[in-house]
Amino acid sequence: MTNDVVDFDLHAYVDAQLDVARRIEVEAYLSQHPQAAAQVMADLRIRGELRLALAEGPSPAKPMTREAAARLQRSLGSRHLYGALQRAAVVLVFIVTGLGGSAYFGPRGGHVMPTHSAQNTCGPPPLLLVR
Image: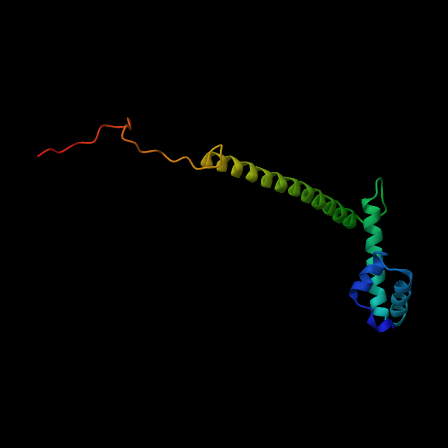
């Protein structure tokens, strides 16, 4: 049953996301495939270094790992800010659309059309041609 281990299982193993039965199957697979086991060990080392670099206080992690962890942290922070700005823009669009609709349709929801009557005092009176 160890021949159905895929990359997803290996990544879940590194992230400690497997249940006990599946973890045992993945470990059996790794014992038979040294190249995959070496890759998993390298991933576990990187995961550990990242955890150390992101921890508070001095860490024995490599400088490159600390820099990568700092970039990752900044990126996650900027995504949070971008999401907040995006939500604010959507709210602003709804407000402007509502105000525009209110101005166009009027307070009662109907479009106000100008009325034409004989007593229209706007502009000069019509010219009558008499023959």
